[in-house]
Length: 391
Ligand SMILES: C[S@@+](CC[C@H](N)C(=O)[O-])C[C@H]1O[C@@H](n2cnc3c(N)ncnc32)[C@H](O)[C@@H]1O
Image 1 (cartoon, rainbow, N blue to C red):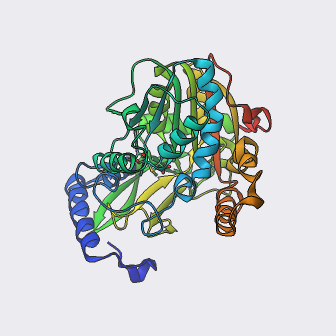
Image 2 (image 1 turned 90 degrees about the horizontal axis):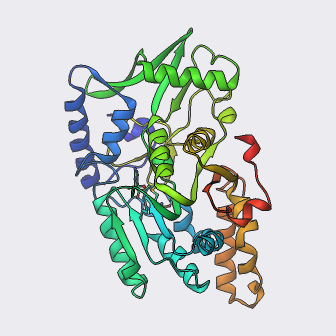
Image 3 (image 1 turned 120 degrees about the horizontal axis):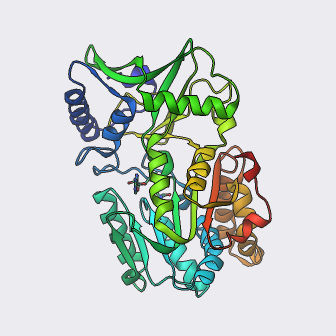
């Protein structure tokens, strides 16, 4: 493992460093004398039972953690999301809300509060959370912050077979393990991880057929071959995930929000080192092989892939736009109506939250919303602005 002197990252505390050594040992055992695909490395580093980043007890969210998500920055995010979900729920009459990957529970709290204000609470708010540790944190938070609504909330172990309602997934798609590849002349090589001198190291081997096929499909969509030396990612896990979620929705909306771009931007010639990002103590960097189990690993989302998988599953794209547009046209204006009446401290707080959520250099442009529908009208905001033509 590299030392922090080499990486310029802050030093982990002693407990975290010890935990990372255990995760590294687990990975070394899986690797043995050979190598594992990067997708397997990412899966284990994030989700190995009792060890992975999302499963073990490290802090993760917030200013003292490794990253801050939009619902953690401000309840304005959930306020607007719920404002947009409300008419969809009304039209379904009796649909559930299903949140995938609820993190600290911040989004559920703000969505449920706003739906209560709008008198469109669902009978059930289901959460599918693969981390037992986060599930406990969510439960504690709801008991403390939403005692009157707790009984509507239910954790489920897998995606239900069929239901009507709305599904939200904020920053979950980017936490699904990806394959990494490199083009060597015209060959597709799979990025794998081996152990060299006690450290994790990249090795490239001829890609298995599923990965070569996925890269050839991307090239066919782009209408050109990726150049020699080009490195990027493909999320084969995301394909399955979207397929399963879409298959489960009889009638309703799937709203995915995440860091991501269209396929053309994802595989642009200048984007030749991919979209992997690692988060450690609120610093972002590009080395996923260090500090396994105590840093978050993410890969931006190819939203065209999501849209095409949903179309294969019979769902329709109802809209695709930046977070800035979604929030500004989707309900932020309502909060601003009586802005000048608010105490000055709240005005300052709201202004700083709005900047973080909407400025292009913050989350405003890089973060997107994609709406996918079956037999319902989508959220009204996409009638105002929509960039679905880019997908
Ligand atoms: C980056 S966090 C985002 C949390 C929250 N949605 C937010 O915006 O603050 C990713 C969350 O997705 C969960 N997760 C990852 N893969 C998942 C999957 N396949 N199904 C359900 N949850 C998943 C993680 O345990 C974690 O709660």
